[in-house]
Length: 229
Image 1 (tube, one colour):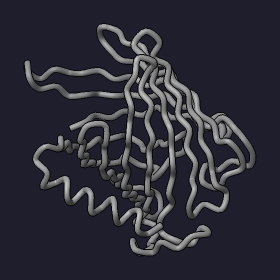
Image 2 (cartoon, helix red, strand yellow; image 1 turned 135 degrees about the vertical axis):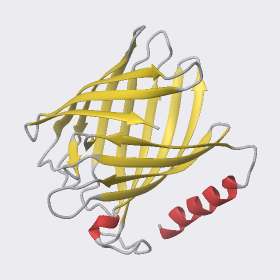
Image 3 (tube, rainbow, N blue to C red; image 1 turned 90 degrees about the horizontal axis):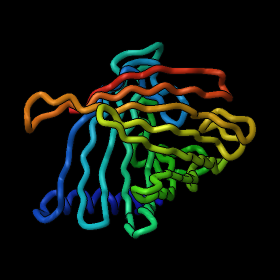
Image 4 (cartoon, rainbow, N blue to C red; image 1 turned 120 degrees about the vertical axis):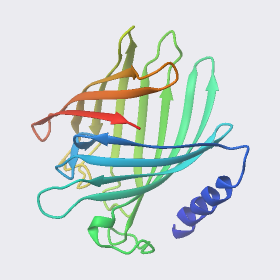
């Protein structure tokens, strides 16, 4: 499993010198890092990313670093890749993600399994419907270093207006999972997200987002705000 992530790091390094590839980098600043209905860091979060795209293949790295919090400061650094196929029926995507949490104190090159290593690896699939019916569906499985082999499923439906983009979504943990804090299959992520572009000039805009999120299983709710740079 170690070789998989090392291979992706090598590909990222190669693509950084490959002028044909499209390179994107930026960051989000969020009032809270809520991921699949779970609060990470209990504080504002700075989330930088670098992505390389060539054709239907995308590879990148993403991080999340809390500004401050109760107890230790939370940090996350992931590597991911995505292969997608577009058709008249919609877009089909296959995703691999390597999750690593520096704040846990584990060394990056510790690729042990059975919940003892520094990396948890996930395989995912997503579908985005066509413009005429833009329903969204995704499914994910932790296949390495998660004794519960945690699963997550989410459905969503976007709505575009003249002023703002909306996304209604609902997600569930498929079974008992320490990863998601569930004792059995449970709905953990329900809400609505808003995205609005604030135009600073004709060529420059600032994306502003807000989300209302409820985790019915934990009986928690969150209202978060963020912007992208």
